[in-house]
Image 1 (tube, rainbow, N blue to C red):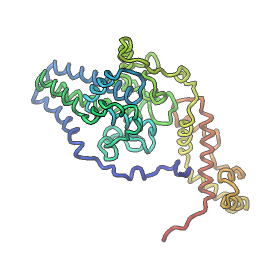
Image 2 (image 1 turned 135 degrees about the vertical axis):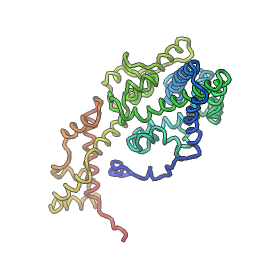
Image 3 (image 1 turned 180 degrees about the vertical axis):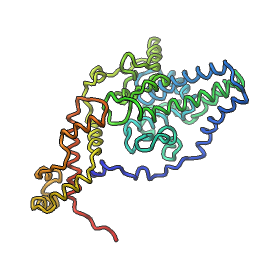
Length: 396
């Protein structure tokens, strides 16, 4: 893949069939419509308390189970509690644990790129919030990315019976409190849980602060953190996924971590992941993959084609430029190396890149100069490829 292709958004990924699978949306819509049955069933105090209790308890098993354990393995537990955690997580009716974990690991590998399954940057708010779940190419998941989970037959059984735990919970609510228990207790809490969870995919990549440079749009949002039991510290999480605790500072509320810490005292869970102190203080250098990703993003904030056109106009009729084109065409020099022999006043300077970095990325990092230097190299490479590549004949 050429550098210009890497720096220029491609429509091929989005050209695949992205129509909503309408039959699959029907149960989802029916769950929402069922909430209006409260006009018929009535709303009792007991049912409201049940709704709140189910929302909080299931938010915990979603964040601790689906996310921090199955997706990131940020702590350890027994095989028995692993199954219990998976079963309880699936009472949320958010599909199977294997599907959920595979999709989430894919999200982290490609966060806020065109390959991300739910990036607001590329697909907009509503698609990232809920629409992606019902598109054909996301109906299946790549289970080869979760070999640590698929080896357990009981987890494969749970994944195949993705809505059985939710149906059983709905039945219990009905048998316990009648129609108010089903409508208010189960359906209201399920819809609230849906959108509370989904807001991390959408809002937490749009609104909030970026303490760390992560190469994506993840943000810390204290408001989301309150009603998602700590998931709102999303930039923290993207900075160090192995951490069980997502609220890195003492004042960052993380209800899920507090519950897991309590469970660790009884040895139900153990080996809770902790972020390195250097990372929490923002003193740890970034990995090379993140540096490359951020440098690509920084380079792409400049109009590369227009810069290349300006350089071409300034140098097209100069003998030095013609000679360099011949050398590159003959394979005697690489395009980016040839450009260093020219004086290029139109190419962004390191100081301009530093200013753009400050404007584009909210967090700070000890790797800033590495990112800026690499970004200028990428800009020069991209311009060189456009300037020195011989034009091809176009079909008439």
